[in-house]
Structures are given as structure tokens and as C-alpha cells.
Image 1 (cartoon, rainbow, N blue to C red):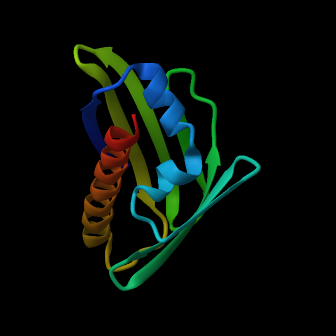
Image 2 (spheres, helix red, strand yellow):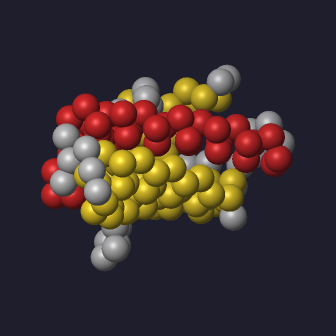
Length: 136
């Protein structure tokens, strides 16, 4: 299983960060994906990555230790789960996002696919953190 973890300190209290992350549609859209819809606990995402179009259906799941967690229900991954954890720190809230994934459908070749997905996901998480910093 591959994983990507990104952390950043947001200059806001945990409750404000949690509330902003809870605005699922704009929070997910902030990652730079091309389309997001949220309905009945499902998040549908469409994203153009290079020459490929990736469509995912994500299910919001309970995670007692996370501000937000979701798992893929339909898409290119054999498995994919993302969690956003918050920790109060001096100067605000540290947000740590981790996406663990295992590819199910090769796009270019296993090693290259993992590298491309990891790089893309890191950019998406950083963009979400930029959004959080701007709204909190």
C-alpha cells in the first residue's frame, strides 16, 4: 500500500479548522479537482490528471480520531482512504492529511502510476491546506 502524508499548521483554533473541513464540497474542490458533487454521504470527484480522467466515488466514513475520513467506493484504486487529523499546537492547529492507496487499474505502469498519483495527491492536499489557511 502506498501513502502520502502532508502536514501544515493553520493559524486558527481546531474548531474553526474542523468547521471549514466540514464544508465538504468547497474543501474537496479546493484540491483543484475539476468537478465535485456531494450527496447522501457520497462525494463524486472528476479530475483530469495528465492524459487520464479519474472519476471517484468516495464515501464519508466515521473516524473517531479524524476531522474527516473517506474511502473510495468506485474508481481506479483497489483501495483508497484519506483521513484529516487535527492537533492543537502553539500558533494554531496542525492538520495532517494521509491518503493510503493501492492501485487497481494501471494507467501507465505500476511504478510510474504510484509516483504520478503520489505527486498529484501531494499537490491536492497542499491546495486544500492553502484554502484552509485562507478561510480560517
